[in-house]
Image (tube, rainbow over all chains, first blue to last red; front, side, top):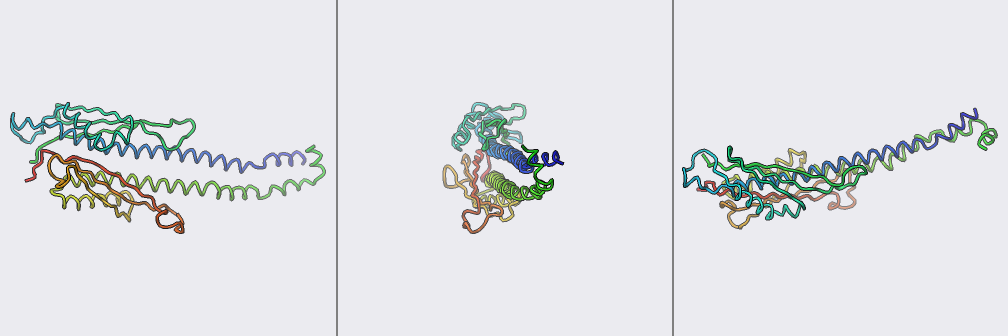
Length: 152
Length: 156
């Protein structure tokens, strides 16, 4: 009987420990989910920049030489990589993307087979909540593609 | 020492001390920790849902504006697109403020113009007491998107 009562005394506070432990686990899980969705929101913002930059690249990259060389038909306009790249840089500066995402990097590729331009932007983002054992920043990447074809 | 103490008291002494403790702890700790946590999670995700919807609305509105034939049609389409996106994202009472600016200013549909559409909206924080005032029960959100008007379009 005596031993039994001793054991009961040892177990006081177990429920509190369990609930606090559960709360800590829950908070950690919540912080991870909040971080992930914040990074996802940032990626969506970067995706908007990638889309706009691709449109600007397609518009800037098409020099309209087709008009003089072979006339315009239903095919896509010829794109030039250097002017497309300049258009992307001008777009990213004018929209403030470089200020919003410090460390922003971009790559511009023109696919000559399909006459489309592909803009890929990536940037590191700081995660809003710090969770022990997880990284404090993440790299997000977005891609946009565009081409110019005359109205039928 | 403990054995002596235990001998002095009848066995039911300690048992009675601990009766109902788990329930009490579960109740007050649950109220103290879990309820605020649930509220914070709900509020954070309501705001993130709103931010997601606002960003999508700005993007769709900008595309809708740029594909329209002229500015007045573009403004109407931009607003319709923004409302549609926000309703699609579950914000039924969406009344977004859609503003369009362009560089150079004037006719926004001239070839080579850069148009920027800004969408502003508010998200009501769930289960927030109204006594703090209307301003503090909602969260302001805004997003903008910039697209060029193509130089190779027929504006005849």
